[in-house]
Image 1 (tube, rainbow, N blue to C red):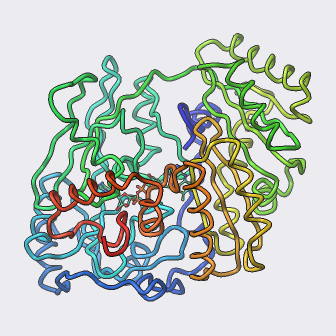
Image 2 (cartoon, rainbow, N blue to C red; image 1 turned 180 degrees about the vertical axis):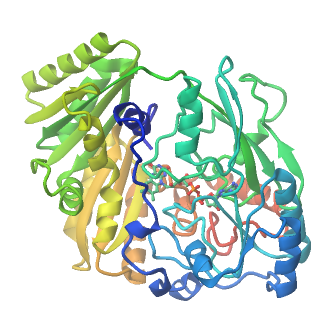
Length: 504
Ligand SMILES: Cc1cc2nc3c(=O)[nH]c(=O)nc-3n(C[C@H](O)[C@H](O)[C@H](O)COP(=O)(O)OP(=O)(O)OC[C@H]3O[C@@H](n4cnc5c(N)ncnc54)[C@H](O)[C@@H]3O)c2cc1C
């Protein structure tokens, strides 16, 4: 996610009314879900000590949610398969509660019966957090999609966990508020976004604990310094401690003007120079500063933009401002652009505000950045890593991987949110291979740990990173996490095989 303001806002403003944004969806991947191997077999996972789901269980669960249970084979296949189409579980049912009370009844039932549960939002997790490994009951928040309240003066939006990003942005924008989360993936839901760890300082969730108890931390008051701040442990808990059913989000005012520049340069060293000058020139106006390398941009060009004249350059930086004063904001970006040229930090570039001659200008620039993963996953299997690293260590990792990896890897593309020290690595191969995956895990985790970074910057641990996350954490933190899990979920029913390392 890029910091601050969003591409979605830009496109809302730029797009003619009534034009529908194409959504990313499962169909972006070319692999048929039925051909995805079962996770339990591919990774040799041992099933936990949970009860087997019976047809009576399914009937009882259906009775708790007014019949909203899915058992159709084809639909189940979609709910059991992850977005990248590399993991597959075998849950026999998806339960669709509509209210917090229904979630509470479902979890109480599962807890009493010792049935394992997998919470699921839009299932766009890139770390396999949202799909079961065995036969966990999938509890979907898709039907909890109500906008409950918009408080314009207090700047808060209170919504059901199943509200999609599109829905949330629309609701906020109608009241001149700005929904502060930016994902390419428009169907991502509020519960999934918060559970995956976004905006801990802005989100106040209501959560159902595994035994059915409801914990309401939804005060819309910005300041509350009474006792422990318990809500924080659910932000980023990835469904391992309970199910978030509603969230009150703090939202800033909607910015009025967006300007974007895409600049080209020939070394990562200069990319960092561009970032420094961007911060110095634009300050708080900067809403994004994203870098992409040649492999990343050319992959998108090949899959989506063949007719569009994107030049092939070693590195690209996308800079965006979001502010309230059109002339002033545009002038500042132009001054930066000229200063970058004077300092010979850029080869060339394009610059334009929203009201540029071409109304699709901003959208097109962002489309390059946001379609990298989708473009690569159309061409084969993608091993995706999202790490935090000190800036000077980032591209050295990319170069190391290109140099050292076996012929199995066809392409190493990288892109990242410079202002957050966040680097995304997408390694493309023909097929998923567990040995290559292990080798990559080892190489990347070792490098990141030694550099003082984090092996998951924003995507969470889920299933894929469950054994990696603890490497870069203080052991005392890991121990405390385990103790909290034991306290809140003594039977371990919530999203097993995820977040915590195997055997923990
Ligand atoms: C093309 C693409 C781009 C992406 N870009 C970004 C990005 O820029 N930044 C970023 O951080 N992520 C990104 N993601 C990852 C993903 O979209 C986010 O993690 C998102 O927050 C997941 O929302 P979701 O509704 O799909 O949740 P899911 O994928 O359904 O679930 C995510 C995790 O949260 C748990 N969960 C879901 N709902 C609840 C709930 N109500 N209560 C408790 N636990 C719950 C699940 O069990 C799972 O562990 C991207 C994904 C794709 C496919």
